[in-house]
Length: 75
Image 1 (spheres, rainbow, N blue to C red):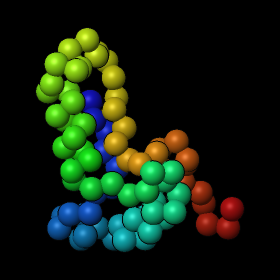
Image 2 (image 1 turned 120 degrees about the horizontal axis):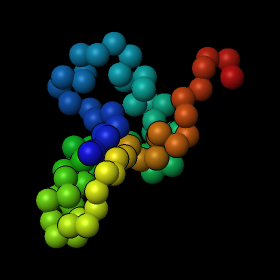
Image 3 (image 1 turned 90 degrees about the horizontal axis):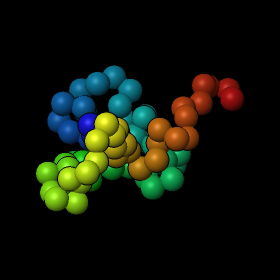
Image 4 (image 1 turned 135 degrees about the vertical axis):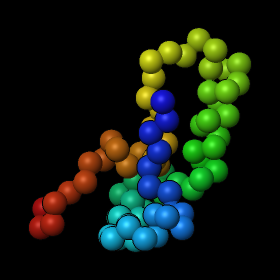
């Protein structure tokens, strides 16, 4: 499975607070924000022979955001 981080799309732009999360991600995620191409590249990996023996995996494509955690205001 691919667990994509926040990708800025037309639909995402309508979600309250999404721009703030993108700004946080830019400075918090070790590899920065992602785009749709990053998620597509992960999908190509799974459709290729390179992943033929990969099973039961969650592939995070989020610039490392998930490993950093999201702080609470004031912390």
